[in-house]
Image (cartoon, rainbow, N blue to C red; front, side, top):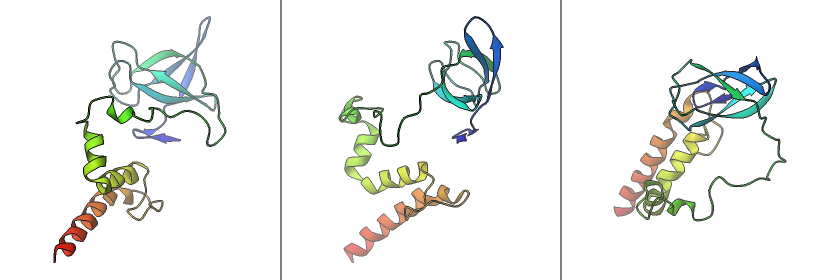
Length: 145
């Protein structure tokens, strides 16, 4: 399993009254940041403590495994109008409104897909956004001719 920092950090047990595990921070993170870690083959969410962490620092956290859900069930992270919670000039809202192809390129890149929407090989997805942008610019240039 991997995350944007590479492999999902693994955890080891710490003996206390509660089930506590020790997790190595995958990167330097600020207080309140959440990331996933694995312990005993189960994924669980880790919240960075108030003082923050540096990459490689080990922290003891409670082990609360995520409950598996059936595919297609659960809740969205944000509501239907969640894009407006930071105001009408939020960068993502403006991008979606003014240039949806650029937003599509970002989403495809984050999903590690090619500009055609297929699963990309190795690191080929790094050029996805650039290619979608070039295709869009080329379309508008040819349309004006």
